Structures are given as structure tokens and as C-alpha cells.
Image 1 (cartoon, rainbow, N blue to C red):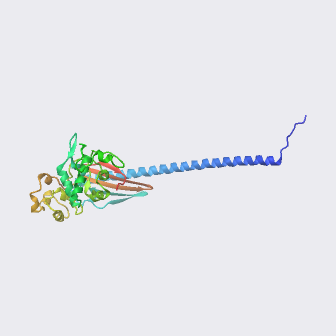
Image 2 (image 1 turned 120 degrees about the vertical axis):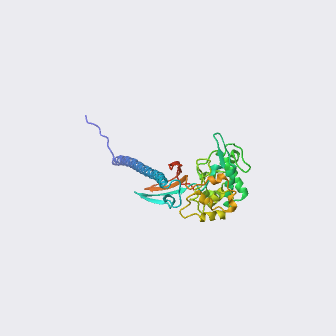
Image 3 (image 1 turned 45 degrees about the horizontal axis):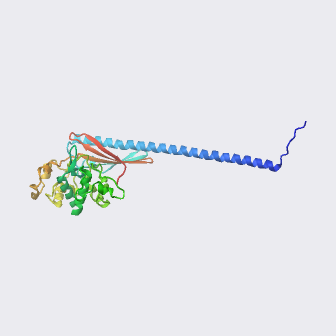
Length: 337
């Protein structure tokens, strides 16, 4: 018995061949797209790993700068205990260190010739209250910076309210209710500030005011008044010393006292007090006389590393104890203007 064979027309054969070709092309396109995605993922993973490796190396470099600074300051103390001057190695221009595939810049700066903002309150175990003596000193500093009397009071009151714990607004201050009424509401700090940049969150501290006072203030991790290093005072930060002297001498007389300082710095604090004009001798109280010294208890390190594609900046606050031990008490990563 003969089998039946159906006829296949040429047009139908061409149609089936076209469908097969289309299927093959779709498969190739799909495989190509998958391959591109896989290659892209591999590239992204590789780039991410490379970036993380660069950032990790930059972090090690910048932490090494902090360790080196601590050792340098302790060695300085060993050579010359309790005396730091503008002639010391660490107090000179910022240093630049070449790295493999990068560069690091580091600078150490005295952090005693500044008004400690946290000293505006006195602290006990349970509460923080306004310190009248510190408030008067702060307002003298603001006066020296040519800030008007009414604004002096407002700046002081709002900052004290931010630091104290009583929750009661001062006459020109601001507590929770004032901050809650802002377009972007938040609460008052009721704690010590850890960085001067926090002033930008406090009532009355505009960008202009902040830029004007920033070179003259600091935020130490305590409420103690800053013990100024008399060998680190310059003409630029003389208003801080003027404010500490309690108005006993004018700003111009303060500058004249600094001009009379030996080039190598004072050897004793008494040398500085001997330069005090007769008009101011009787008005300097014992507390003010015992406050300044000739060494820097706080020193800041500003370091920046550029390594391959990574850029990392860090600011550390280093505290020097009375036995010459240096310790990093605060560390902040990133640039803050």
C-alpha cells in the first residue's frame, strides 16, 4: 500500500524558513541583551569594589595622620613641657604628603585662643544653667566684632537656651515653641554643641553672623572656659583675648601688649601681665589672672586625602593633658562650611 505525501508549496516553505529565522534573531537579541546586562553588572561590581578599596585606603591614610599628629604633639611636650609657641613645627604652615596614587594635606591649629561656646552654661550632674561671667565675656567678644547691642543679647539668649536644660526661654531667646513654628520644625538642642557649625541651627544665627564669629569661637567637650595660650594669640584673634580681659584694657592696648611679646614667645605668664597698662592692673580679678597659660590644651587636626578616585576629609580635636598625653577626643568626617 503506497503512503500518501502531502504536497509542500514553495511559498509555505519560505514562510516557515522566515519564522525560523525570526525566532533565531529574537533568541540572539535576547542573549545579547542578557550578555550586555551581565557585563554591565560585572563592570559596576568591579568599579564599586575599586571605589570601596580606594576609600578604605584613604581612611587608613587619614587615620594615620591623626596617629602621627598625636605622637608629634607628645614628642613636642617631651622636648618643651607646658609651652607651645607659633614657632613650633606643628603650628607652622599646613603640610603636604605625597602618597602612592594620591596626596594628603594636614594642618594642626591651636584651639585655645577662641571662646568656648559651651562655657555659656555651668554644668552640674542634673542641669546646666546660664553662666553670667561667660555671658558678659561673649558679649564683649561680639562687641569687638562690631555686632550691635540688641543683636548681642539675642545671639546670647538663643544660644544659652540651646545649651541649658530649664526649657524656659530667655527674653530674646528661643525654646521648643520658636523652633516648632519654623517652616521645617525641629526641637531645641538642650545639650552641649559638638561643632561650631551647629550654630546655623540656632535662632538669630544667620549665615552672615555665623561667618563673622566663626574664626573666634570653638566648641570644647566641656563647659570650662577656654584657657588661652598667650603664645598663640595673634592680631587676627586678639578680640578673644580682649574679651577675656573683661574690658580692663582697650582692644588697641591688647594689640600693643601682643606686639611687645618676644618673638620666641613668653617664657612665663607673668611676662604678659607685666605688659598690662596701669589703668587695667586693678580691674583684672584672680580668676582671669589664673586662666591663661603658655600651652595649648586643645589642638585641631584638619586632614584631607585624595587617593585614586576617593576623596576623604576629617577634622579631629586633640586634647593635651597636664602630663603631656595627647588624645583624640572628637572626630568628624567630611567638609563643613
